[in-house]
Length: 342
Picture 1 (cartoon, one colour):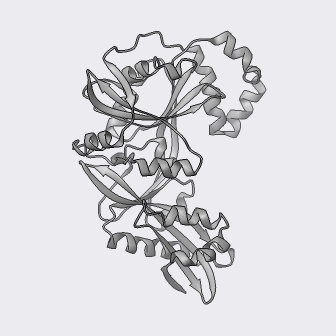
Picture 2 (cartoon, rainbow, N blue to C red):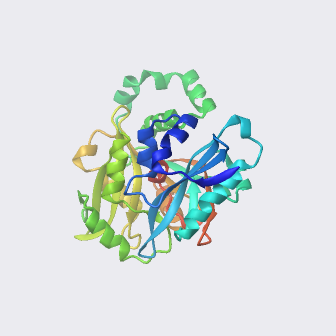
Picture 3 (cartoon, rainbow, N blue to C red):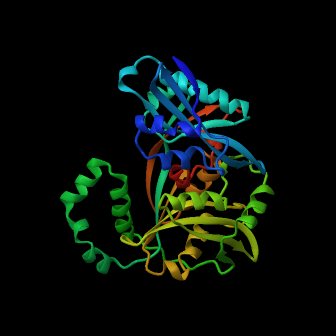
């Protein structure tokens, strides 16, 4: 068996193994905005037995950009399973990443056992899925969503644990608990500009890893069909953070994909209350956000929201981390939904 780095002109080989399209392979592993990325290949003579990909993402920590890698596109030919190829493919990618001073590798996966065998630490139940009600229009919404009145359907949704449907259901249920407080007048939202965000983040010494919300990242996500609403957050005319949202127009809720702000100035409840008054959310019933219970900053946000009237679906999510240049755990990540969109 030979383990080596696959070159761009060899994409046809991995696409034959996992036919997602050569364009997708190029976009994920050979885009100039996400380098250095790698595809490790395992060859048995002329046969490609398996592959493992590491995609480069620069996260922000302590005011600096830090290289990390996301594990992606793990494929083993069925004839070669049970031979330890996955562990060796991971080891091959690890060596590439270490040579480039990558801090750690990570991934969102339910297949924890094989990743643990390859040296990753697995984490489960670390997320809180929170619905923050912002409108009360119960009768109109209830009777326009007849399927949610059917208790048999409600039972089936929860039994199947279909998170997409659960989100939609909780968005509807959130109408039972309307928020009746006013916006904070000194919190304002303006158009998103990455140069301002970058300056804010690089001047902050917070010892956690977070997504770098660069324009190139959103351009890449748009090519995957993912579009977002983005705002800068100001408090008393000072830039304190930003928020990235995805609108669900069918069920009138908005998912918060990423959020960051200086927590010593305002609370997340105050931000969401003020955001609910922005004109483009006038018909929305709730905001949805996922936060990392194990991170101190996110835990403080969850505590603040718990004092408000929210629906909190606790103990969700599965994630893996493998330290490379630096010892890292789940508590070190400001882990938002945007990580899972990558």
